[in-house]
Image (cartoon, rainbow, N blue to C red; front, side):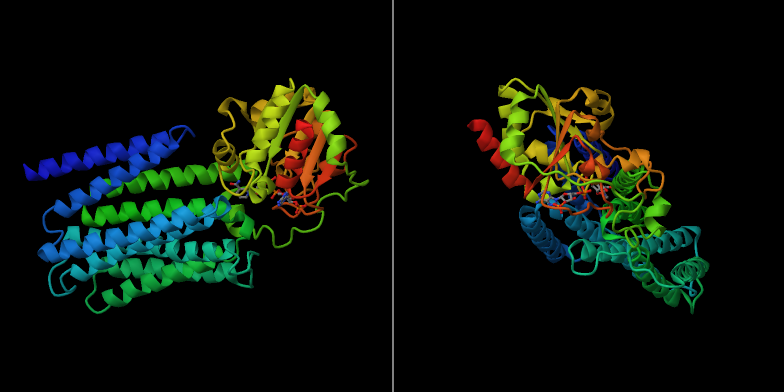
Length: 471
Ligand code: NAP
């Protein structure tokens, strides 16, 4: 009876978790969805604690666990409150890494409780536990050190450039062979070699995590973080099999699958393959123009002159990018949008799937500024109407509006879908100077006859335009 009640409670908590994840799909319900998922997880933790045999040390054991939860919640709460939007990928990297480490520790703890190998006959169930423990250690270990390297690269604590050296792939291959051999040795449950095999797995997985992420360029790190997020889910799911915990298996599978889907979406939006991201060393060579050399000059315009054109515009499309996030210009951008609307213009915000540095980056910023959701238009829907648009205001975006991606087969970003800003009658490009974007490439758009550059920090420039509009 007690067992059935516990299983039902697990299913309820898994259901809450799934509903919470579903709610993350819309900006209006995402906050509630996040809270609901957290409640589902807390419920699962509490049920697990009441499950028999979890805490053998009586009330003192619970005190340690309660202390751990309180401390973890405090550290997590402070970090989440303090993190800047642009620092989100770093924080997610750390969370993934610790998720992977937690799964590894579950496998280690379970291994430590097994009866001494070689002294008793190995049951099928025990062999299963050994193999799944090996897989958990491999995936969890890679996730842990890979995520730490990703964190260090993104936070600038180590160089964000791809670190490539001769024989890198061969070394990775050898480490993978060692991991496979150690898994087999553990599965055979040999008396004298099991401990060596287990600790080899831990060391090898840690090494592979580092080796796998150092050759990846800092700008590709969001894709890698999404992949590591998926791996942390897979590790959790394996850990669920080890301890026979249904909710951990379900939650791990959900995280694993959703992380993988996100990784594929990001790769598609950049017209890259996962293999190219992981092994391509993108950013190691890409600098300067790449592709055909740019012709002509960039023409600058003052905010006063831009104002006259904007005032006459009937249809305006704002194309935000990474620079808007850096400048935290979303609130003034919304104010400018409202003034243009009051002036009779139709205003839309064109959202590229990989604008900024993380999926949904622009949606989150614009939602934070309360830009009406109906004004946000996806790339595929805005492109057909771009030729009818009077003014496209490109705010800190670069790669996502680079026409070379569509027209120049020699460009490294050729094939990446873009927002066709260049088709608008007039383009205002707001950026600080002549800096390139994430890909390190020059942008043909800035040299086109219908483009005018407005130099300066995006927030200051838009604030200037707002005060011009207000007269
Ligand atoms: P971008 O190509 O990185 O360009 C950003 C531009 O913003 C720069 O050219 C920079 O020029 C300007 N800028 C920086 N700070 C600014 C400020 N304070 N005020 C005004 N301008 C500023 O950005 P994007 O067009 O959004 O493209 C995103 C890139 O990231 C794509 O290549 C994408 O593939 C990549 N990526 C995205 C994701 C994702 O999930 N979103 C993941 C991985 C990779 P100045 O220095 O001259 O100001």
